Length: 154
Image (cartoon, rainbow, N blue to C red):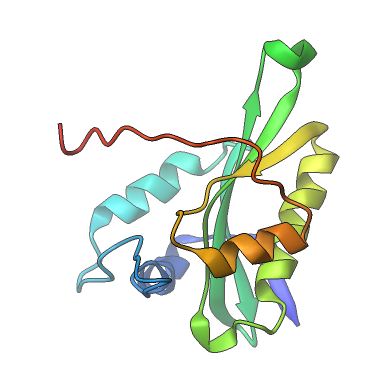
């Protein structure tokens, strides 16, 4: 059974290890070090108590096999509507095809509806064709062109 729950500090080594797994040639992070860089714990702690920005894990057989972050964005436009932004979606390649990603996204969509969001949105690296097909099967549409400005290199 796949369980979706809010991440806790003890999940961080597993989460960071997932971030280091290559997905279509890309990785989110360098992977865990010993000891784990305290920046991860600080980031998770900054989300504690924030109901609009939560990092989740997916467990299968008691093991963390997936992650995603759900951020609720309050707009002034759209008559004060809310949007759910999904980020950092990762599923362990060893369990892909077993419904983990679909369960995580289904959970995020249901949560967005429960929070009266009018849209769920995400970005996906242009090189991730498999991920794009997955999101399209769930009903997502590539309706916008996303842009980013990398501040770390400036």
